[in-house]
Image (cartoon, rainbow, N blue to C red; front, side, top):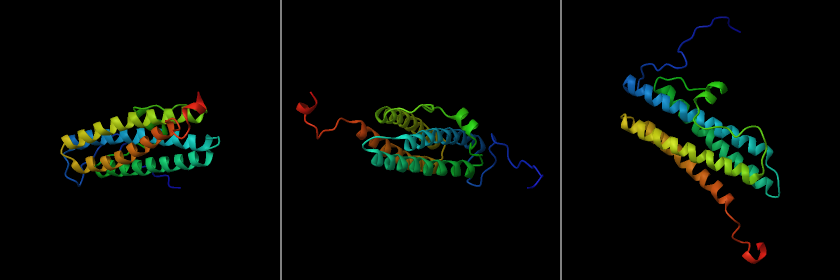
Length: 181
């Protein structure tokens, strides 16, 4: 292991970028991207936790659904981090820094019933979707349509997965009212 410790770029800095986006604009966009990245990892860890602890008659379907959802989040997070780096920034990567940067909160370590877990997930998706829309608007208003497009593609996946959680939380329409009342 090398003993040399040369910092090439400090974590909260934004350097000149080859994409020719002005420094002050790049700084604002990288800041927004790092917030989205931190939010993504809060969601990722919550979904991963639910994947590990889900139980019940629909275990396998829920387990596989949660795995697909957290994989989508992880793929989006990777895109966000790479864009932040391309704009001259340093993607927020450590768990403490991500927790500090995030505008959403992890539900905690407790294990809940499936319905409650999915309600928590849907709420988290909603908060992140709203934040992502704001970041898209910021990027486009600052003259960076490419970042807006990258975030828009991630937003489509977030909205689709969030909508799937909404479906899971609906009443079972195949059960007649007479059977439940």
